Length: 324
Image 1 (cartoon, rainbow, N blue to C red):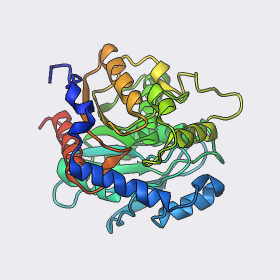
Image 2: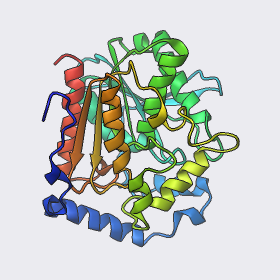
Image 3: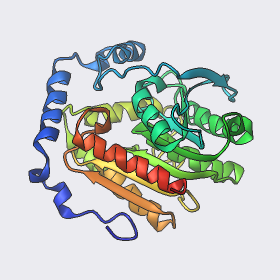
Image 4: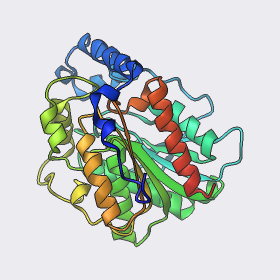
């Protein structure tokens, strides 16, 4: 790997280098999802209820018993957040987490195990945003909530949680919202307070990058139809997916924090990361790119060596940003 951090060997993309374990994980995902009804036949509220019961693409995550739920002020009303502090060490900052789910689904508690891990491995207290979801609350509601929680941290929330440094990150739509939050803080407030961005399988061009458009119907977590319907739910009315405020791949990226971009090669959103990481670097930002053979969309949610390798890379990235 070069100093740029984004050189990836060609062998990573060779299907022959996908491990037997990863192939088995993917086969299990496909089998499980093929047994479920088409989620788009249900209203969004029902899809969310089913997902919360484990009737979605990801395994049901155990709840963290010491997580704290509270609200913080936002322009659209109180914004719920879920806080997980380290138990085996002192807190040394906050990890502002933004969950995935296509701007339509998902909740902070679905990520408790990974956020507990980050808390213990890095000492960062997780603050996960339960932002308003589309289609009931389309753009800009979700991005507004994420920006407002970031501002709350900057205006006293971080100090209330013990102080220290700030990092940000999320998965899928959460990676997208992490980037838009960084850009909003820079452009709207002249602030860039974060030391690191942990960006996992993000969607950065909501028109659909080539890998999204080519993917087709295979339901390995999500497919082309899912991604386009999520985008249509999020972007409504006079707003367009060409707007840099909505598709951050078109935005100015100068002056943003170091970022780790993580993606699996069996993810429809592969091109979003492969295109965004060089743009991040070209804008003058420290950039790392981690590509994992055969990894499905947000494969870190599934047990296995590949997930552990990726999670360990994230821990190391955050710890390095903290000065370890």
